[in-house]
Amino acid sequence: MSSFTPFRNKMEQAGVSEAAIKSFERNYQILTDGSSTDIDEESIEPVKNLTELEELSKEGEVFEPELLKQTVVIKLNGGLGTSMGLQKAKSLLEVKDGATFLDVIVEQISYLRESTGAQVKFLLMNSFSTSEDTLEHLGQYADRGLAAKEDVELHQNQIPKINAETMDPVEFSDNPSLEWCPPGHGDLYPAIAGSGWLDKLLADGVKYAFVSNSDNLGAVLHPGILRYFAESGKPFLMEATRRTESDKKGGHLAIRKSDGQMLLREVAQCPDADLIDFQNVEKHQYFNTNSLWINLEALKEELDAQGGVLPLPVIINKKTVDPRNKASQAVFQLETAMGAAIECFKGADAICVPRSRFAPVKTTSDLFTLRSDAYETTKDGRIALLNERQGKPPVVELSGEYKLVDSLEGLGEPSLKRAEKLSLSGPVRFADAVEIRGVVSIANGGSETKWVANGVYEDEEVSL
Image 1 (cartoon, rainbow, N blue to C red):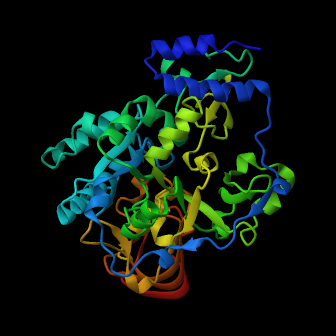
Image 2 (image 1 turned 45 degrees about the vertical axis):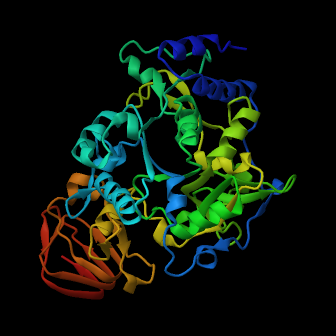
């Protein structure tokens, strides 16, 4: 069996923390042992009847300043949004009315601090790819105490790629930076421990962490959930929401039969024979929104008990060292998911939140929808679905030519306030006063761009 020593030497030379090295060593051993990472259907039971947010939150509830003082908001900000054609931090993408994701998040934190008087802590988990751009953008908020690296940055680790033939650290002299890869957002735990941030936060009296993705503007600190989490004494709480057919390929919550522990099963952990059950959204009803509430004292205790490493399930990705060259050396990249930590804490739980708290921007269709008048910017800095839509966002389907962000420039912004679904195919542009109602399909079969004229389009198919 290959020795881990070359990996330790490489990581130590790169200044990687001991917490991250130990975490990677555990995952490497799982890979080399050949242990199965599958969770088969026979070993689990579906999760049923989660507590609904409406059941635990009081109408008109406001934040308790004392609880806010004990809270840190952590946003995962490591992604570049390359699938949408971006070469910078995804959070620097303009999302609405000239504001970027990061601007919106800063407004949310600023409003919390100003309206309650509590200096709620704020951290961004940046990666090597996003750190410089993000900190430069935050420079304009120095007067709000949200600009200094030492005050706001939690740095995601990098881990070595593994040569699939030799099981040693891969070498790639053409571009040594490609010898490294991100370890997934499960790196939150070694990153917060190894950087010293966990001890610093606890020393400052911060006990509760709310963690979510920077591209999910529905994920905001919530007074009812914070109060419930603090009063419950739970070590870990996941925000889940109901799966629909469009979510059937995503991970779901389950209960392990052997010990009654709640866990998260991703499709990579599902045997092929169980795929039909995995995708049955009536059977497995809840999925992880990646918005988590963590008791930092419980995290510290669990890390100490586990020798500094949370035993997260490992996701093994087969890649090539140069992702743009499929003929380059085959490698393994090891990844963990932060939501999977639900199985690491006894007494961990989940609640069911409305879909309004899960509005990530993964595609240009998502971005087009969020920029529309179906969403508004609230006084507390949120971008929220209009109340009149009763929690149901319009569905937008854009054809392949709109895959990249640049393709939205000049497209126009039709009114989607009363739209159920808009399907767009082919090169088109919207005039200034187009309103979509109900289910509308607009198609241009030619290669020349055509205009959608001003007017109301309702429950119809339009061929240009």
